[in-house]
Image 1: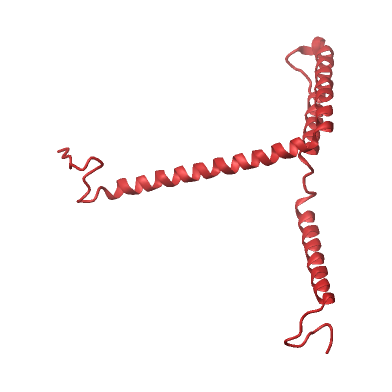
Image 2 (image 1 turned 180 degrees about the vertical axis):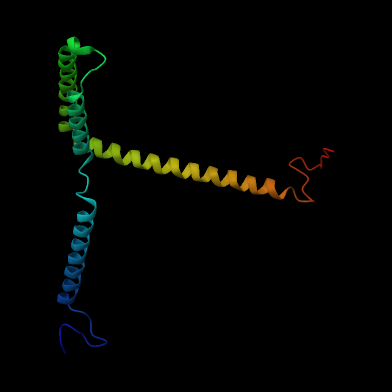
Length: 154
C-alpha cells in the first residue's frame, strides 16, 4: 500500500488531505497571479481609493490653466485653486485616516443599493414586456374584464 494512492475502501490519510489542500491553494494562487497580470493590481480599500481620487483631482485642478481669466488674473486664480485644493485635502484626509472602515461599509452599501435597484428595474421590465405581449394577442373571448361584465366599444 502506498500513501499516494490509497486502496479502495481505505480512508485517506491526513497527509493526503493536506496535499489536496496545498495543491488547491497553489492552483488558486496561480490563477490569481494570472488574472492580476491580465487585469492589473486589484483595487485597494474604499478609503485608499478615495485618497487616490482626491490626489488625482487635486493634481488635475492644480495643473489647470485658466484661459477665461486671462494672463493677468492667471497666477492669482492658480493660487486660489491651489489653496482650495489644499483645504479640501486637509479636510478629507483626517476623516479617511480615522474611519477607513466606514468607506468600506459605504462601498458595500452602495453595491447593495445598486443590486436592489437593478432587481426592481428588471422586475418592472418583465411586467412591461408581459403587458406588451398581452396587448399583442388581444383579450381572450371569455375575458370579461375586471368588473365581470363585457363592455362592447363598437
